[in-house]
Length: 357
DNA sequence: AAGACGGGGCC
DNA sequence: GGCCCAGTCTT
Image: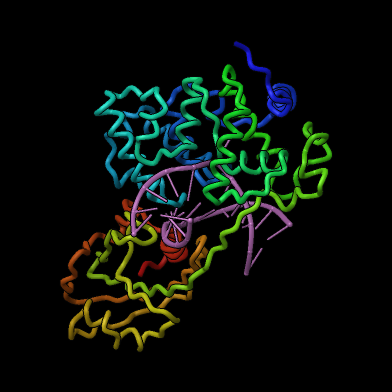
């Protein structure tokens, strides 16, 4: 049975055939491993930002087995700077699952794909459609925006009702015999024409039937309700050096930067000067009654995260005798590039590369 | 259902 | 400073 395609769907496919010139290394890719890798990297990440990471990962790990066999620290080093580090951890777990449970053959059913770590409804639909031509409509930021504008839907996209409504609509619009092309079309269209800011409505092939355009709602759609609170945090990092070595640890708390490394941290709720820090309980917990000599204090560094502003300062200390610091490792300073660090620390290290603390 | 989770680009 | 990006997981 042939179902008639919606006008919207027809126009989108036509735009894709005749106008769309967007090009990306993973576009048209049929290898599910490469599709999966690109999708994980691109979650909440702009194409331009993820692109070089994708190239690097493919070079280092051309197959899922290679990725599964890689040392975790090496993979995190490659991921360093990309953010949302749980993606990296989950990606490695999924690679090992595919290698072990599926013997290296990427699962080709939606439910199996979605059950892999780090793969939710969007990524499962993307892989299922791009790699296996399965009829699953993708629902990402682009699709929310294009659908809410064209159909004039004012249901908040961050509500449960909204997600369900958009999901149903997206699935209805999907041409089952061209799911890969359609999914690619709507995402490219959202990125190139129906952009968040300054969309190209004058040249839009859907302009005649776009509800938002006719009602001047384009800049107002899609609607989101949740607004985020930005917290301020103050990180005071102690760079404790012993001879040519320095103490670091891996962050493991349920907090930002899990699985990345850092130095001794004293977090405070306000900017702290060195005297305050030296007399703090946290400082005593690190050093007991020893009074290590402060060598230098860096300028303040600031990093803006989505929902936190991190102010950091780096304080260098040389000790004659290494303190006992549970959970920390003493590593050669010239081996720091074997470990993954958060952006604010790599920025500090690079700013300081000529005169290492 | 609501938060948490990075980093960067654009206005 | 605010918004958004080929979203997912935890609580």
